[in-house]
Every structure is written in structure tokens, then in C-alpha cells.
Image (cartoon, rainbow, N blue to C red; front, top):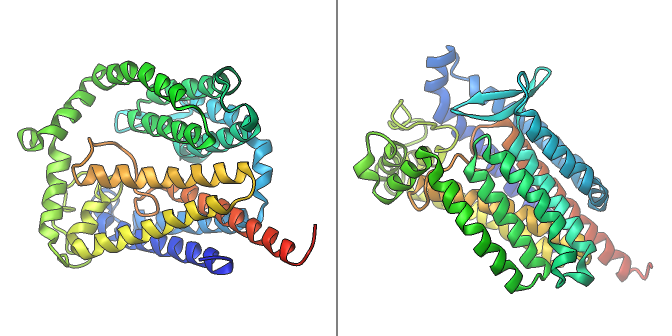
Length: 374
């Protein structure tokens, strides 16, 4: 998948995932939309609009040199913190489902954490690439990014959103490791963070209930384990080939959030093991291609940026699928490209645009070298 074919693979798989997401959003949400809004197309109509905006962003970003993002590192991270702070300001933050994760500016609302993830990756990629020569020096490398990470994580936990906080920490540690930071430094930081993570996990009663439901879901099937038990039923009902598109029973008000966090359960019920396997293969192709792009990047910033953005998508896929299958405690993270949600879809497509630009830039550099240009 080298050269133009590489970008074509990434572009094609991305479009297939986005198109599949539109189909599944309609299938999973039509009954719910009819019941709530009297319009079975309410959610899918928005998803199509989000996809159009996201694809436009993807094409645009594939043409804007990624090297320019290096200059957005500090402005971007300060903007991310500002947006998170605005969530606590009355009139800006929108509370839904017991959490304040949406920011309303004018007539437009978006999920702040989706934007913050990308800004954090850009900042870390730029910062760590500049510190390449001093990567083994703890005092030169860790204080600044850890300070920003701590502020962001505390603000995200305030929403509250433990899942996204854990994801941000995982991405940061992955990039620290990738940059060549000492294992002893990373191990020490991890040991220091574990008590705090354990405290946060059990501090809120609902998080402890989710953990208990994860360990023994059938014993909590009527309360905290309801989501995962209904998801199990969806997977079991789907069998090998599924019950057919649009024929899910669990989406008829049994499975909570059938078009968002647990859309994979509807995919499993309607398309079976075969459909879930196809979806998994598409994600594997996309993630593999992302890391290939990273490995071929000649500059440290491009390598770290591509690796971080790919890891971001990969972790979101892993966590969402793991939660839907009962392999991880339930978290409110969407399945990229598939779950309903404008911010998630637009940001995911924009990320693909940046990856395509890194790939195209690398190909242009190789072409220039072959042509003897400086």
C-alpha cells in the first residue's frame, strides 16, 4: 500500500466506515426517533450532514501541510483548556445524561472532549519532537506536558468523564514511550498515578456499580448491569449471519443508547458474527495503514503525530467494542465513524485527512529524491 494506492486504501476504508455508520444509525435509531420526535429520519438526517462536513474537512486537511500544525501546539492546548473551562460557565455547558460534556456557542453545540483529544496529540507530538535530543532528561521533558495533561484530565473528570480521562492518559503515555522516554520514568509515573486512578474509580458510587456490573453482569441485570446484559442478548440473537438489517428486537427500547455507545450490539444482532467481523477488518486495515504512514514519515513530528492520531482511533475502537462485548467496564465512548454523533464523526474524518496529508507529503519527498531535487 505504497504511494497513491496507500491514500486510496485509507480514503476508501474511511468512506466505507462512514457509509456503514449512516446505515446503522438509521437502523438503530429510526424507531426511537419516531417515538421521540415523530420523525424516523431525525438522527440519520443529521448524521448525513455531519458526514458531509467531515468529508469536506478530511479533503481540506489532506491538502494542508501537516507541518503547520506544529505552530498550533500551544495555541491549541490553551484553546482546549479554555473550552473545558467554558463547560462550567452557565449558559455554555449543556448537561445531558448526568454529565456536562457539550458546549453551546451560538446555535451550535459540540462535544468538547472530542476536540481536546486531537489538540493534546498535536501538542505532545510537537513538544516531544522538539525535545528529541533531551528525551532521557526527566526535567526537560516531563514537567510541561504533565502539567497540561493534569489540568485537562481534572477538567474532564469534573464533567464527569472517567473514560475520556483514562483515554487521554493512555495516549500521553503511549507517545512518551514512542518518543523514547526512559521506561523507569514511565513506570514511576504509572505507579504514582495508580492510587489516584483507583480513588477516582471508586469515589463516585456509579463507577463502582459499573465495575461490579462488569464483574458479575447477570447479578446486576436490573440496574447497573442492564446495558451489558441487553448487549449480550443482542450478540446472542445475531448468531452467524444476523436477523437482517432493520430487524433488531433489542433496539425496540430494550437496549439503551442503541445508536450511540452500544451501536455495535445492533450491528451484531442484525448482521451477526459476519457483519461484526467485516467491521473489525475495516478498522484493522485503517489502523494498520495509519501506523504504516507513521513508520514511513521521515521527520519526528510527522511520525509522532501520525502514531498518536492512529492510536487515538485504535483505542476508541478497542474500548467501545470491549464495552459492548463485556470485556471492559461500560464507558461512554462512541465507536468512531459508526456511532451517532456529529463531533465524533467530523473529528474522526478530520483525523483521517491529517493522516492522508502525512502520507502524501512523504510520497512527494520520495518523488523529489528520486528526481534528484534537493
